[in-house]
Length: 206
Image (cartoon, rainbow, N blue to C red; front, side):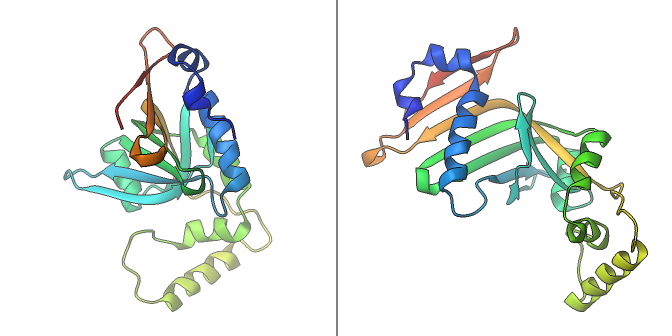
């Protein structure tokens, strides 16, 4: 495992951009983490200023940002629509690494959401219709009955994407790469975008 963060100077890191480093770290995480290397903590703030954090799965990323999918009527969906900023944290414990991201949030296009929904397992597609996510649930039996009703409704045909189910893209305003070091003398490099395009990099004390 190459220690890119320690062995590469800031100017070179900035020229390559954060997605180059993220891709290398993510590939190593995918090869070594036992479960869900794409798991990320998502922090939101609702319309009352109340923060909340939960783990979601990143489904794709590119130079526009990091994407996950959800029910827009869920707690996180409503929070992001009301206050479209978020924090992300990837923590790969086995590699002793973190990537922290802060940025603005916007829904993905309908075409992107349709494309991703179409490749989900059918049971997951049915569940997107049956689950009133974050709402009170009287019993598990109630939920299972709703799942069965939706499955029957679409038997023999494709399950369409619910209008309330889509994705969010977090466009980074700050990306921090954190590498564990002995005695808590960690290495931290922060990428921030510049108005003219590209990125700057600076280090901070652990």
